[in-house]
Length: 631
Image (cartoon, rainbow, N blue to C red; front, side, top):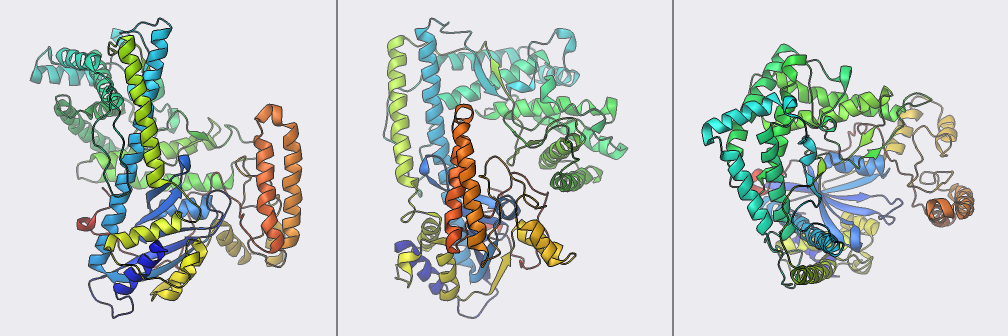
C-alpha cells in the first residue's frame, strides 16, 4: 500500500536510528482506543507539540483533515469519548519536521477552504430558490423580502430616538467630525447601490478540488451579498446610535462580576482604543469588514455600561442553537461534573480577568479571552444556581447573533434571468459536491484515517515507496500503531487513560477495589458514566474485564434488544430514534460475546479538565517560521 510504504521510508530515511543532534525535533504518533460512533475500529493522529492533526469522517461521507490544540483533542477523546490514548514519540531532523508541519497545515487550510466553498455554493443555490419562490408567489421583487444577516441581532434598529446608545452617539460625532456629516449616509447609499446591482453568475464552470490544490478564490454572489448586508446594517446601527438588543447582552444581574478600580481603568483604556480603531474601520476598503464593525460597535456599547454600574457586561457569545445540558432547577443537587466544570471555568475566567490588573494596555485577544471565558463561567454559575438551563457550545467563537432584516435591497432579476441563474447555481453545486467527494471521499479500507495520515506524511517529503511488512493490514488503526512501534526507533511510549479508567484508578487508591468494581462496572450505579440520548442503553462496561466480557456482553445484548422492542412502540412519537439506538446497542454487544470490546461509554458533558497526566512528556510547539498554529 502506497501510504504505508511512504511512511516507512520517510522515517527510515530520516535516520531515526541514528544519533540525536541539536537540530532534532519530535512528533508523536497517537492511537485512540475504539468506541461507538465513527471510530469503532480505533483512530490515529499525529501530534506536533501543542497541535494535533487527524482525519475524521464528516458529512457526505468525506474524510477531512482537522487541526486541534492538544488539550481540546485530549478532552474530546479521553473525557467525552472515554478513550485511552497510546502515544509513541520519534525524533526527526528539524528540516523534515518543518516539511511535515507545512504539508499538514497546508492541506488543512486547503480542505477548510474547499468545504467552505461547497457550502457557499449550496447557500447560493438556496438563496436563488427562495427568490424564485418569492417571484412565483408574487412577493415584492426589489424590497420587503426578509434576509437573515449574521451580526444584525446585536442591535435594535427599530428602537425610538430617545433610547439611543450614548457610546455609539459619541462615536458617530467623532466620525462626522473627521469625515463629514454626510459620510455615513453616503457609504450606506454606495453599499445599497452595489447590493442592488449584484448579479448572480449564469455560468457553471467545472469545479476542480484536490487535497493539494487551492480552490478558486473568487467571491461568490451570496458571499458578497452577505458582506454588503453586514456593512449596511453596521452603518445603519451607527448612524442611528441604535442600542443593543436585550438578548445580545448577557443579563446576569447580581452574577455580573464587580470590578476593582484598576480593572475598570483597564477596560476604559481598551474602550478608548476600540473607539479609535472603529473610526478607522468605518472608512475601511476591506470588503469583509462589516462583521468586524458590527462586533466592535456592540462591544463598545457593552463596555460603556461598566462606569455607571462598576460591573462587567459582556456580549452573549452563545449561538441560538447551543446545546442545553441541564434543567434550570436540578432536583437532586448539581451534577458533580457540572460543579467541576464550573470550577474549571472559574479558574480560566480568573486567569483572563487577571490581565486587567496588568499595567500594559489591554489588547483585543485579551478582551476576546475575557469575553469567552466570562460567558462560560456565567453560564455555569447561573445554571447551577437554577436560573436557567446551561448552554454548551464547544467551538464558542466571535459572537454574531443573526436577525432578519426586511429593508435591504435585492438585485432586480427578470424571471428568465432568475431561472438561468438558478439552473447554473444548481449545476455548480452539483459539480462541486461531486468534486469534493472525489477529492475527500471516505472508504473503510482504501481511504481512512490511517491511510490519509500516512499518505500526507509521505507526500510531504516526496519519498519513493518501500513496501513494508504488514502493508495489507496497515489501514487498521491499532495494527498501524503496533507496526509503527516495531519498525521505528521510538524514543518514548506512554499511555493516557480515559476518564473512566483514570477515575477508577483514583478511587481504588482510596476505597476497597471490590467495592469500586461492583459500583463502577455497570451503568446504573456508576459515579463516572452519565447515560444520554445519543447512546443506546447497555448495562455493563466490558473494556476492563476480559474474562467477564462474554457474560456482561450477554446482558448488554438483552438490554439492547429490550430497548429495540420498546422502540417499536415509540415509532409514532420519535420517528424510530429509540429503535435505532436499541439496535445499535445490540450490535455493539455482539463482539463482546467473543471477548472483543468496542463500546466504552461516551459522555455528553464531563468535568472541566482532565486529571493531571504525568506520563506525557513535554513536546515543543512548532516554530513560527515553520508555520505557527496561530495561522
